[in-house]
Image (cartoon, rainbow, N blue to C red; front, side, top):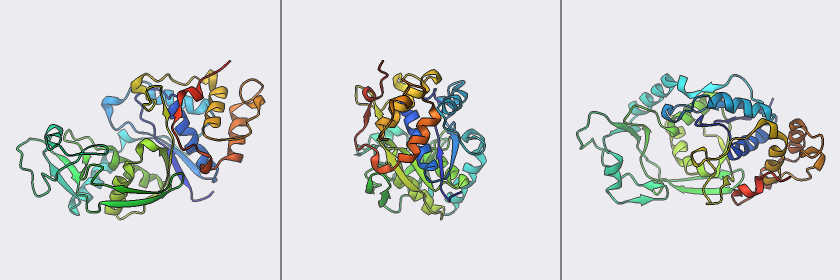
Length: 306
């Protein structure tokens, strides 16, 4: 077994759709293509977003598409103590500060970055507002970051333009995505994070957390995402249809074609006697990140025909 450790971490706000299935396939291929481990984590930390039965539906969909995982399924909702301990460590080392600013107060400053409002540093030296609750923000000490993305090549980031000091625990006590992802990836020993390009802006925030925790960050590979006709990312919140196990072979074949897997025989794509095992074995023989398309993948390229 190689040192490669990957993971797929869906949010159970609904069943898998073509976009999330594509993300799972790319992640699985990259791990199995390097004889690595592939873990499944259910990112259910944000309980208001969790849909009843969604976790079980995700597991069934992955299974019927041949995407088996290693070890037990992890659930973020069960790891609150680990997040609390990480936050206490960061706070004790001076990396976090209490922030009583509301979103409206941050927006009122009028500073808008690439991904939304830029935090102006209001509470860095102590909260000026009187509130019963407060968030915890990471004190950004390094503005510029660079990575060598395994699909995109060199990518540079300006963390100030991305929003500056960022929240790691919300005012309602819920730990934020950036912190829980880093803590959980460290616990799994993840060496390679493979995910959609819509999460590219998370890289410098998470690298800053790795640095603050005195840990080595993983390698990154960001792949294209599936977009709908309105050019928005395909998502459950926009009514994306769930994948169906009875359509596993043709759906998987269309995804493999869309991500650049060559030489798919018609006998493997649903018109003959193909199986998901045959498709994935073929994909593993041809998998390489360099074959991933540069542009987003339109849903039209994934529609069933015939």
